[in-house]
Image (tube, rainbow, N blue to C red; front, top):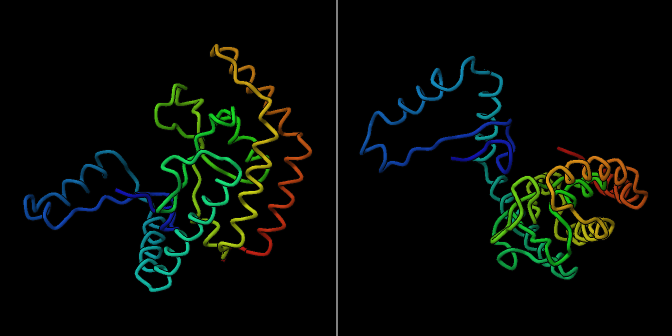
Length: 220
């Protein structure tokens, strides 16, 4: 299974693929999967979405997509290398693909806090659990980020140096925020945190720098 809206760069959706071996064992498998989805789980397929997925698959069949995929990995490796310079703890020590998982416990910053601060700074990431995480899923200890979107815009290794700097500066702005232990207190804390951090001048200044950088690499 895979999504169609991330590395594939299509509309929001997913694909279920059947191997040749699986097809030999069960020739009716594709039909069973199709029926399980529509009408089993979904109704009213969106033809425009199906057509868009077809276009993204056509793009994926071209040589340019291979070049794009290779650059994604190069960018991820370059970004990981720069983040290590800022003492970020990368799960697995780096990356061999398009993703980077950061354990923020050595920074004493919760993943939810980091993700929101970065959003204010113009950088969108996911809060994410990390190995041996003692925090609940809604307040995990890490963040997850990837390079497909910025690679699509045409950014390369040189820009990863700046992106890592942006991330480091943004995280430093929230190092003083400690997430409460009690659930009710956390909810109230996050409400106040969002309001306060949303007005943080240094984070908003980073957002302007991010916008300036992105203006040099418009969405194709």
